[in-house]
Amino acid sequence: MSSGSAPVPPARREGPPPIRISRRTLLLGAGGLAVIGVGGYWLTEGRSSGGGTSFTTPLRIPPLAESEVVDGERVFRLAARAGETELVPGVQFATMGFNGVHLGPTIRAARGERVRMHVTNELDVPTTAHWHGMILPATEDGTPHQSIAPAATWTAAWQIDQPAATLWYHPHPHGQTELQVGRGMAGLFLVDDDDESPDLPSEYGVDDIPLIIQDIAVRPGGESAGTPTASPIGRIGNTPIVNGTYRPHLRASSGLVRLRILNASAARCYNLELSTGEPLLLVGTDGGLLPSPQSVQRVFLSPAERAEVLVQLPPGSDLVLRSVPHDLGMSSGDDTASGADNTLDILRITTPSDTTAREVPTTLPSAVLPALADAMTERRFMLGNTTINGRVMDMDRIDTTIVAGATERWTIMNTSDRAHNFHIHGAQFAVHRVNGEKPAAQNRGWKDTVFLARDDAMELIVPFSSYVDPATPYMYHCHLLWHEDQGMMAQYVLTTDGGDDGADAGTDMGMDGMGMGMDHPGHD
Image (cartoon, rainbow, N blue to C red; front, side, top):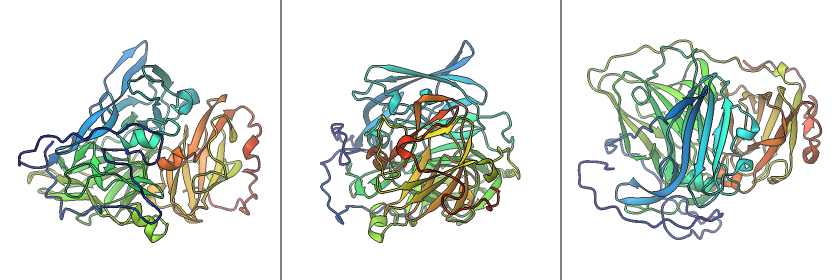
């Protein structure tokens, strides 16, 4: 992989470090263990390239996963692997992936199809394959309860029953998720639907472009791999890559492109804008399309969040999608250590002078969001530094018991001094209020992961599926992966009658349990 026409020196081998269950384990690349005290964070600040002109490497497009239809099921085969990848010219990084040693193929299936996933673990440590954002039985979800031992194969099968959406898959081993995702184990899972707008760009890799954004650590000068910064929210690299491409360049052949953006970083957040100052047209969130395109100047994505945006490209365009400074709500030192002060070029996009303009659709086929009146049970969840409701994860404890098919109102409160986000397995939800206010545009569609700064309170309306299984739990947790690995997770099951919450009895509240009446307007 070359970033220009100059000769590329022979790849420098940076031997992969041993795999350990430790925050200080090197996630990407090589180097000694970081010895970092409070206030002693090391960070090389990313800088804008001044228009992206040095971004000349063609953007890699993940291949579509091969499949076959057997007895009415669409069958996919994945293999978890480890190796080395030249993520920066001349520098090898220790990486992991599916059907390769970095990232994974894009899985694509249609609503109504039954899919079967055979996942073989070719690593020397246990892993899982979690279908993030998918509504499916708990036994197929790919949590730590469905661990795949080395040399073993796990099979998951279910029928897809949700609208068109940009989902993804990644490992979820208890205590090693940051390590495995950070090394590159991630891939998109696209759900198609016959109702999708014909006016949306839809030719995969041509005008419908996947963007899997990660961060890696490179020493000053880009000559060798470095050690990610240890921050209050996890490991922060100083260099973004997209689809495994360093300084990527997309030569668009259309005057309108659809970017399906996934933040697959372990901890870094991205505040995305166009270098031209033109707005992004937001058309989809985690769980599907919006009713109509929303013009926004920036899209903020914490780890695991997705956004679908349209970018209009006049003839002869040369612009950059970049991440700009943002506020994570922590102290200024903690925000800086967590990369919030950085300006990072993500992707350069150019078009030829004879590009043909395309119309932007005015309406989109979106699924109706649930209303507040649908929620008959209210619960609240307090996010500590690495706890939920004061507890750390216990694989043998069920924290919440829910009636299958019920819609509930969950209020998530960040009571810690750290930034967090919150993901619910096996469900998509609507954001009703953020600190008592109507949510911003990027939180007005179907979501499965949301960001909470310090002192934020977010009200969610969550319709749960009808997959009754009192013996197998789903999870809800912070998706900042170091927090997750430290035990910032909890478990729920779906039953026919709800039952008792056991360890979390008392968090299941009536509508007045938080001093909140039922006079809030419905979700709009």
